[in-house]
Structure formats: structure tokens, C-alpha cells
Length: 206
Image (cartoon, rainbow, N blue to C red; front, top):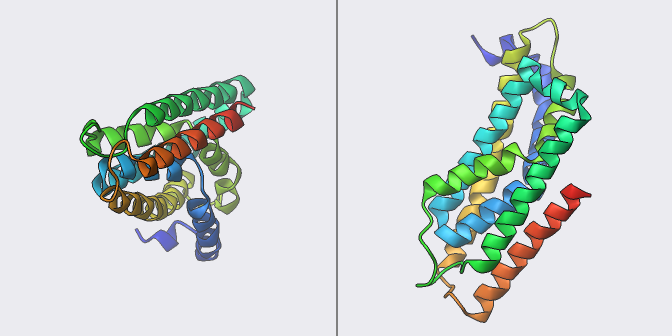
């Protein structure tokens, strides 16, 4: 069955710039992919991006099934997600601060681990949760299959996110080749990333 037989073509075209705006807006997902690219190279940057996209599809699926709306209706549940996200960002900030981005002292980072952590980062990212719950339903036609429409819009967002965040991770991975663990440049980038992660955690908490 063609996508335009499930989704109103006008709504599909209207959703494109909205989804793109979400993808190019800097946030925890993009920053995480950049940090993973710096730590493990381009492959880890792309793996982290794929993990982030997978988490996004879970949000979309839950929203399409109506469970996301239930979470939004229970303030305590959403606050729990928010605090979990803040705590995880603090953990990432601490790990980034302590772990060299490159060089012989840098522990190996596997793409699987980057993807798994990216999944967790997105699952606890309130920005994406709010976007799915607040904006996607505006493009959904109740007279058409609702879950299928959510999945189509979610696939569009996830595909765009994989490309944007993956390119950010790849650029960071290329930059990694010119770094050596313990140099001033490496420490500066590492501390800057850790500080940004910590700032995002404070923002979520407040």
C-alpha cells in the first residue's frame, strides 16, 4: 500500500520542513553523536545516530498506540522520564570528562555500544517525546489508519535524523584522527563536550 494512500499528501508535504527543523536543531541527540564520533571514529558516530533513530521509532510507536498520550496525561510519569534523562546526561558528562577522546590511553569504543547508548539517550529525551505527542497528531487524519500514519511520519523523522546526526558524528570522527590523548586540543574538546552535556542535564532538571 502506497504511503499517499495512508497519509494525506498535503499533510505529508507540510510535515517535511517540520521534521527537518527537528533534525537540524542541536540537542542531546546531536551532541551525543558528535561525542561518540570523537571517541570511536565515524563508524561509532553513525552507530550512535542509528541508535538514536531506533529510540525515536519506539516513541512514535507508543504514541501511535495511544500509550504516549497516557504518559503525557500523567505528570509524574513524564517527570520521571525527564529526571532519568537528566541523570543519564550527567553520567555521560562524567564519562566524557574522564575518558580521553583519542590516543593510546583511550579505551576502545565499539559501534554496538555507541548504538545502545544512543537508544537510551533518545528514549529519555523530552524534546523528542514532546514533539511526537504535540506535533505529529496535528498531521494525522483520524479517518485514515492512525498507527500507520504515525509510523510513516516517524520513519521520515528518523531517516532525516540518521543522516544529520550521522554526518555530525562522521565529521567528529574525522577530526579524531588529528587528536592525541592528553594534548591541550583534546582536553579542550573533551571538557567542552562534558560541560555541554552537564548543561543539558541541568536544563532538563529545571
